[in-house]
View (cartoon, rainbow, N blue to C red):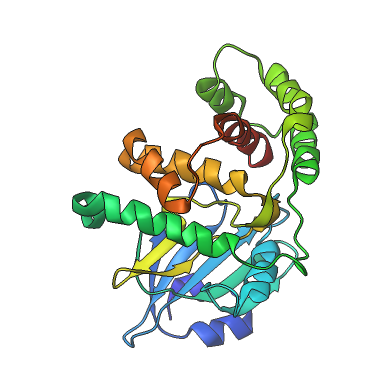
Length: 266
């Protein structure tokens, strides 16, 4: 028997059965992530996360279940929490993510436009009954907690925003809150290129939605712009906003939400 499954909950162990375990590099999630590859044509992803954690897998489970029939997202097959670890088993979404340079490097313009179309799909979800609140007031409460609990990546923040202390940058977020008029939509929470899956030339799904919820659309736009720069270069950002449907970019909001991300997701 595969040694990976020895310490799994019995029900999960039975569901997984025989398969190849392929580790997935997901350094920012805190979870051990595996692609469970089978001889048949269907695969699963398993995440195992030590508990407690500031981004519990239960958040992802709730959102994925709420989003069924609203967006193409992974189906939750199993979730449990044994006090020390969380386990989340989901179906694989077929396709290739937008950060695969070997696939997309020769057709970046088309990719960027599809990346924008995907975000419009996410932002089109009706928020009337959405129970997940990520408005700015809520985000700043999380930022305050992380600040007071010394959870921040101070070195990373100072590398990205040199010239000010972490404390000064935090107070900047607070002082500029009143100027941030929120345009509320359903947001992905981490709309980056690895989290958007394309198959046969079309958007086939979205993954890593554990921080999705109601927020200003610029929370997603800021992360998306940063991801485009990191993967394909800054020259592609204007095309993304054009394809999304924004003629005049609010650069102040972009900078604000890119800074806020460092304080909310340490």
